[in-house]
Image 1 (cartoon, rainbow, N blue to C red):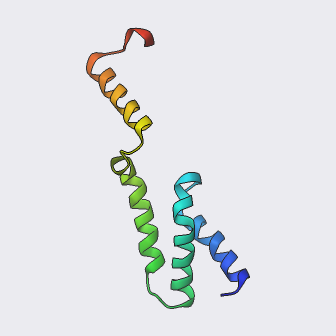
Image 2: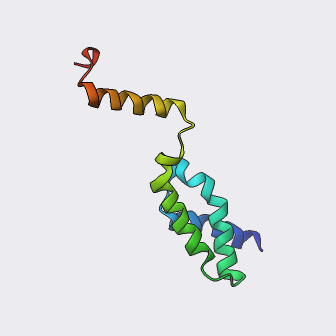
Image 3: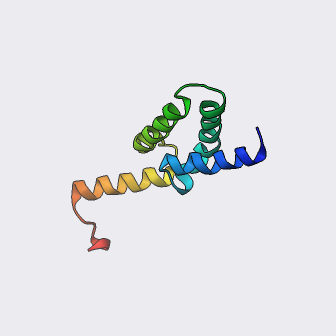
Length: 91
């Protein structure tokens, strides 16, 4: 694969993905390779399937990533707030 073609796919794949910033980073190389496989190697639908997977993952991501303790603490506080009303410090 030529460097020019590789750079074009690295730019085209993320633009098609409709993901931005930190959400895009883990998918950038995967989508570029998938686009290369689909366009130049004839692997039918691989980019389309991975694009759909990347978008589905973003929809389900909050349910999958409970290892983030800050996020868990915020969820717990929101649940407590909803259960008991506004805490005195936030009134």
